[in-house]
Length: 159
Image (cartoon, rainbow, N blue to C red; front, side, top):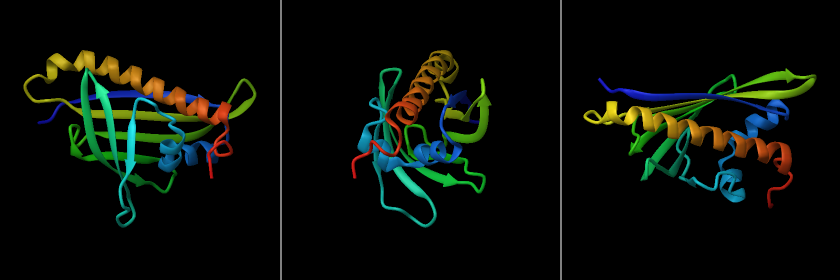
């Protein structure tokens, strides 16, 4: 039985639901605008109804490369599943909901990362991995928030 490290984060963004959902789903924009400087993303040729991409990141000092498959759901949420690589079987899920805070209209984004743990050392790595994944998810959510609220997706993106 595979054990997993799971981290969830909620980020509120002062932007309309449709814009937030579109920005999070727009991998071309993320690559072109370098929204996440710590991640290397590469789109792969599209197959059927899903998007595939390569993601490289460093966690616990180890460079991790995965091929992800993105599945969009009817409610606008989506799940990226690692189908090949270091974190095969792991997922990153994104959910979106309109939310008003302090009289301001915006969008709540729920992000859940679920990574498989190596069988023999999983228990030893769980705490440090969870702490780093939490930091990285918060940082990435803040980068998306900045992209939407400050740079103004999509208007700042080059044609």
